[in-house]
Length: 339
Image 1: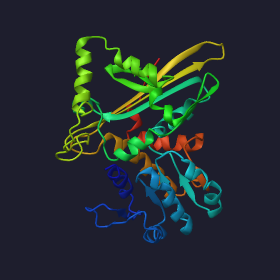
Image 2: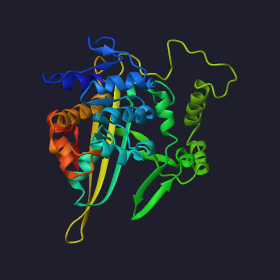
Image 3: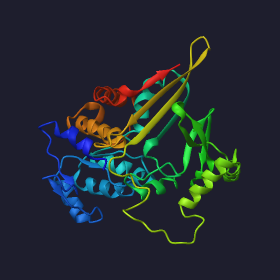
Image 4: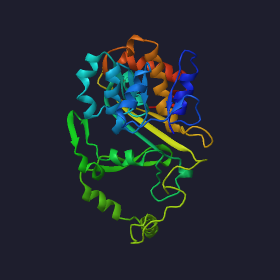
């Protein structure tokens, strides 16, 4: 679902020959079970580079296979503990694993590195949702391609720096730490800033009026939480994104800048992308166009991306390079900055 924009971008270079796994409309398509290590090894060894856009739990298996044939690879997810343990092995094998090249925190990284020497504080927020007109259920959310991955991500822990102190939130407390965050145009999101689960529940149960109370209770009824009847799924998952609908990617950065005279100012950069109901989703464009750009730079042997080992867009040389090309492709042109 998210691969086509990346394929389209890379196909524009006549020097690239692409094999797509499990993509029935392509003449170069193959069907491959990633758990079949023998078949996986054979296909990866036959290519110069592999892009892994499958659920993140399978990435370590792809890396292990790439190590056998010294095939560079890139993916768009965070560097997980199973990948971290392979750092020294990957570098010794002489291959490049490029990670975190997508929308969040990847697009965020490109912009943060540009400002990092100027800022005192930085607050990044990003979310992928259906557009308000297509969020026709009480959750206001739909699974676009991997419900399992979406739910599994809620088991991740969090670690960030706040006011000079490292804050850590264990995975079992992550959902309970969520709180509302308002951005312009009336959007209201939940972010990880509540301290315990109990205050969050009290807040949710403290309905401002009867109409809001009925709205939430109706939503619980819609989800079947108040019923013992087994759900009947008609036409697939009721929360799945449907054809003809569009999605929304919303990213906001707040920079607190401290000048030489001690004066501080706050700048806000926002990115809002809408998908095409009859074309690509905005998540696919935001994630895999970036993947395609980084892949082409890697294939072209650009020095910034030709380092051995596991890399992510944290360094200025890498970020400036990808940000410049990505801006040319139009994704970053949608950024707006206000003071």
